[in-house]
Length: 84
Image (cartoon, rainbow, N blue to C red; front, side, top):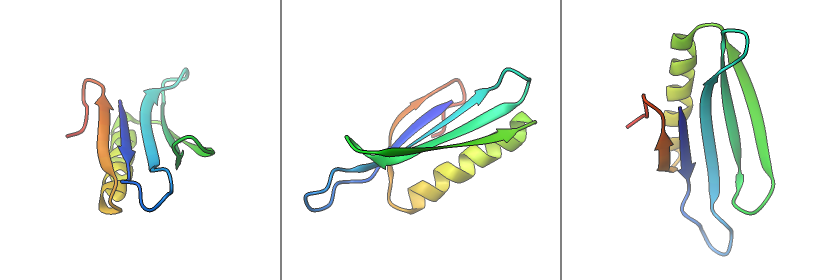
């Protein structure tokens, strides 16, 4: 599952983005990747590991909802359970 969120650009700065990806790992767990930064600039990647898919889904939805509250807009979603 993947979602790309973006803030509207303000002033002369490039827009900021957050990409959230939820994927299974090689050991039967789940991994939540959070990439954030400015488009065309430096970015930061953070990883969280989860044993259960339900926990990973809750963390994904919580991270997505937090960014929506901060003014980000959903630009792209992918996955069978793509968030609405």
